[in-house]
Structure formats: structure tokens, C-alpha cells
Length: 314
Ligand code: CP
Ligand code: NVA
Image 1: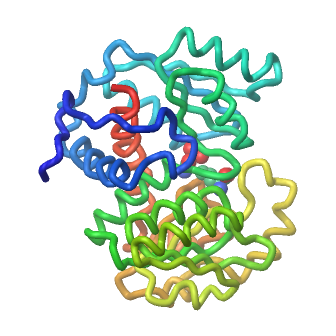
Image 2: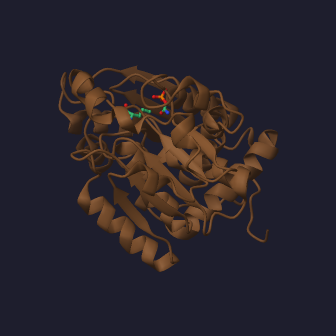
């Protein structure tokens, strides 16, 4: 590999923030995945890279993986973090919150209900803002996931990812990221639960450049045909709990169980961002299957986010 990965040679991202997956250029995305691998192999080389930097974590929603992997990533890179939970922009206006943080910290990681909240934080502060999940995107998840798929399959070009379930934030980020790496992307979902048509159109445009494809279908078998990766996520995301019963009915035939998983390639892996509702979107058997990559994904959140922090903050 000719590109530099040393702690003093990290490529700086061109955009200020990571609000959606598209804030990284194709080159930056590829570099980030390589850097994440380098960081995973030699974490101690980067132990002082964020020395003297402080990062605020603002979380409107619960988290196990994202909060802990960011806190650990920052600590293992020599930086410090402060955590605040609760709604942003209620006790005081969002623009005031952002301008306070701007005076204290070197970066903001925010998990929010509305995409407009991370956009507002980015608008009103001069420090990098990282989207740690919104209603529209979960870009940090997609980064760790692509690192994981590369570990199983090597080059991603010509591989296929089938997402079975809700066309939600995780699906939308995966779609935008996978096609830029040359993967075919298919989503199998019930009627009424398709992704945002604008994001699908964006993904189709990006896929065309790579010779990849995007399919949105209500036929799970069609989505699964030839898939290297079978991915699912909860049917009711955080904030949609009141729709859980109605969604359970709509999605029941889209559960990734042994029968559905068997419709993908024989060497397919099962992925889930977690937290999972076992027995709903995925059966216990696929979660525990030999080809389940769910804990590899969780591990790689740490390494991919370290790479992201290095590129955005050093
Ligand atoms: N996958 C993920 O983002 O998990 P948390 O909600 O626990 O952060
Ligand atoms: N789609 C889920 C992902 C959780 C990591 C949610 O938004 O709740």
C-alpha cells in the first residue's frame, strides 16, 4: 500500500463534518477503510494521536456500541471525552448549545432524533460534527460494516449485500456506502417501508458509476439471490416504539431465519448492527450461526471510528 498511514501522515478529510455517508469522498472512504485496518493491527502506534483534544458526545437516544466505542476510541488515541444525554435544543436553543461547545471542545459526536439537529450543530459550530445516528443515516455503522465485509470477502467489487427489513437509517447508510465500493445492494421490505426515494436515487447514481446496482423489492427471495451478505435491523427503530405492534405484523414474513438465510449464497454472512430483537427481525439461530458476523461488526466500530477521528481531528 503506497498511501501513508503513520500517525503523523494521516490524510485530512476535505469536508468539515460527517453528517451523512456522502461527506466522505470515494477516495477518503477507501483510505479510511485501509487506515481502520492499520489501526486495528497496530493500535499502540496511534496512542498519542489525539493528545490534548477533547470531544463532546451528545446523545438524545440510548446507545451501547456507539457510545462505548467512541469513548474508548478517543481514550485509546490519547484524547478526552465528555458525555451529555437528553434532548438537544430544548433547555436552550440548539444554536446556543453549538456555540458553547465550540468554545470548549475540538469535535462533537451527536446521536439525534432528527437529521436537522446534526446539521444545526454543524452550522453553528466550527468544530467537526460526526453523526452518531439520526433518523436518516448511521454512517459510523456503515464504515465498521464495510471493514467487516472486507475482512470476510476481500475486495468488495461485485459482491452483493441484501438488506431484509425496514428501509431505515442503517439501510440508507449501507446503501450509499456499499455501492460506492462497487457492491450490488438489494433491499427486501414490505410495502410502505421503502427507503427515502431521494436517497435511493442518489445511490442509483453512485452505483452506475461503479457498475453496481440498487434494487428495492417486496420480494425477499429476489433480494437474497446471490447475496454475499444478509443484513437486517430492528423493525421499529428508536422513537418508533408506538408502531411496534403494527410493524411486527407488516414485517413477519421478512424475518431472517434459517430458511431465508439459506436463499443467499452458501458462503454468505449474516450481519446486524445490534441491538437485535431475537425472534423478530432475526432468529436466534442466524444470530448464533457460524457465519454470523455481528460481533465482528461491533468490534470494528472501534477501529473504523478511530480512523474517522484521526482523519477529522488530527
Ligand atoms: N449499532 C449501534 O449503533 O448500537 P448502539 O445503538 O448500541 O450504539
Ligand atoms: N435502526 C435502529 C438502529 C440502532 C443502532 C434505530 O435507529 O434504532
